[in-house]
Image (tube, rainbow, N blue to C red; front, top):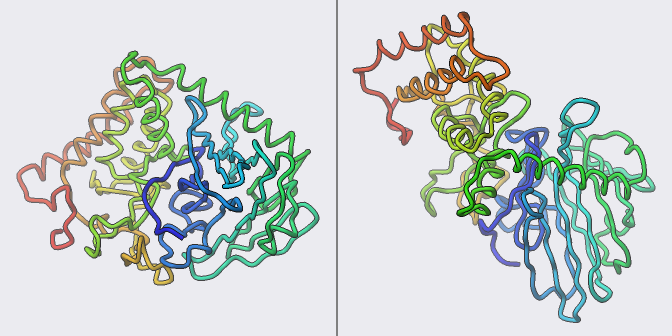
Amino acid sequence: MNQPNLELSPIGNCQVSALVDTDGGFVWGCVPRVDGDPVFCSLLNGDRRDEGTWRFELEGQVSSSQHYVRNTPILVTRLEAEDGSALEIFDFAPRFERSGRMYRPVAFARIVRPVAGAPRLRVRMAPMKNYGEALAETTNGTNHVRYLLGSQAMRLTTDAPVGYILEDRGYRVESDQHFFLGPDEPFVGNIRSEVRRMEEATRKYWQHWVRGLHIPLEWQEEVIRAAISLKLCQHEETGAIVAALTTSIPEAPGSQRNWDYRYCWIRDSYYTVQALNRLGALDVLEKYLAYLRNIIDQARGGQIQPLYSVMGDPELHEFEAVSLAGYRGNGPVRIGNAAYKQVQFDCYGQIVMPTAQAFFDTRLLRMADERDFAHLEEVGEAAWAKHDKPDAGLWEFRTRQ
């Protein structure tokens, strides 16, 4: 098996996300949110590539190719075998409006379609728990498998043969097969029709969202793909925007400069919002402004940290996940980020600038008011009091405070 690489494609729904390799394998994915336990962690699992993964192995595979469904984060992977057989894998995290609110469950859906010959498939489903400490324990029923992940559990519902999945056995795929990994509760409805309905609704949601962007004709495909990727970095429940979907990808081989970026940096988030705002993605801005209001409210004397958790927690205690070897063996794998203790004064400006827009932009559903100004004034006073003092700088060297 080849070493892991960073040719990865994200899928997600602004609640959970996964990174998919070029063969259609889930190599990274956390639940119940982006900074949670990585149940799919083979990207950082060293030689234990069969653990912490969810992949479909085509017997005799000789090639693979990928593309996204137009203007969506729905990923299509085509696997081809030496005998001419082939299958396609459609991967997505459901996201669409239902009953007057956004449906974005802690769930992933996959559809496997035989498109040529008589492909034989082996499903390797091996989620882990406690940051790669152990494989999830399983129980199963006729059409589902439960994965016990410490304090949480997930249920895989499928119309594929459950026995083959549990025993890692290969079998011939003669019709479309559907997989839904989600909350540990009975799946309501027919798995085939419901997953297809979810795929269609998710596709329509994203294509409608893209239609609302203000994009020139030049470089449309690239700009749209970048906009979708940036939106996937927002934790919609709170509005926080994470710097990355991953932790501990090394800055350089053997450097040990492996940091957890699954948190909201005030600086990075400002530039993300600025870019999407230029495209007219007001939904991202509005939710991020709500997140900032909570950060400003809890700031003691206007003191702003460089980063916070997606839930606004100011303390991101750092530890090493010793069970994970690291990307290509480059450890350590860190959870949490001690940079929250640093002093970085540029973040004051990056609090004020997006918040200031809320006082003037009449397109916003909620504009800023006098209470917001009073809290923002405290931030401004704190910035003025520190403007001529040294700080740690934006590169977060651990030798600086």
